[in-house]
Image 1: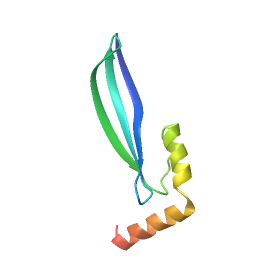
Image 2: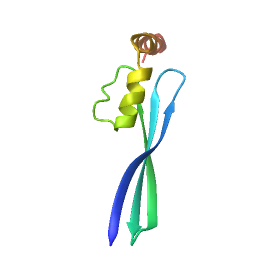
Image 3: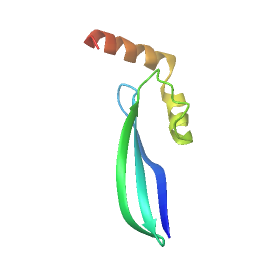
Length: 81
């Protein structure tokens, strides 16, 4: 029997308050992993994170304070992005 499993397996907080999320997708056959791949994405301060994994949401809620969001937006504006 083939089984596809997706799990957030790594969450990192970057200095500017961004949250880097790695998701692992594994394919198992009869309980034995036969293939896997990784996908990464970043949740920046001020972004909507309501669709993220519960662990990611909890970390974003703790890290993305008003001060962090303001500092992130100011840094981006200073870079002209």
